[in-house]
Length: 259
Image (cartoon, rainbow, N blue to C red; front, side, top):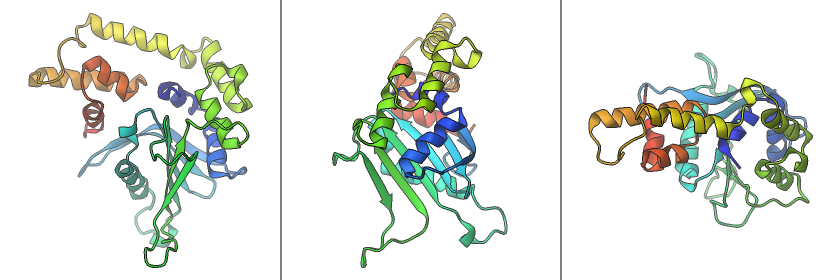
């Protein structure tokens, strides 16, 4: 499950719609609009770039995140993403009761919750009664390591890990993967080749040399600029961190700093 590649897959409405329909178990769900790499600026706090943000035909909001590493899928991070969706939902003067539901969905490489389940739904509950609080805020973890081909969710997880379009169950995803891998359009140039070329360009400029830890302020600034440029090309945080010789969480913080 390559997060760079999946971001490009999600650039097609029908693909993100297909994924949401299966995870939400809503076969008629329709995506009205969506943004890949949605940049939320927070002038008084921490900003964030979300993998994919979508809105359906009843105005429910969705944030779909592809997470390769456990540290990027923490409950606190999910909570923050949920808050970012909420603060951009109501217009001035709107009543709070007009709040629609929001869903933060982490599709993770491994079982980060650790209970061996294919999917986890987290909602606020009232401790004394066990009943739902009903604020409309939902967090979902999907464990992509379980690829039970007897279920729609398992087949979807199989497809997200699949490198060959001919081996996919979903015609929608298979068509998109074929477009990305087999056509010569700018959008579908091999991601690996493109990223390798970008790395070589930065190396030639000397922008990837040196130790990232303990370097001078000027070098830190350069490292941040390099991280930003690589991220804009679709490179995942862990790969950027590997190139710069820095911790993944530190690089993630650089990318989310207020610009």
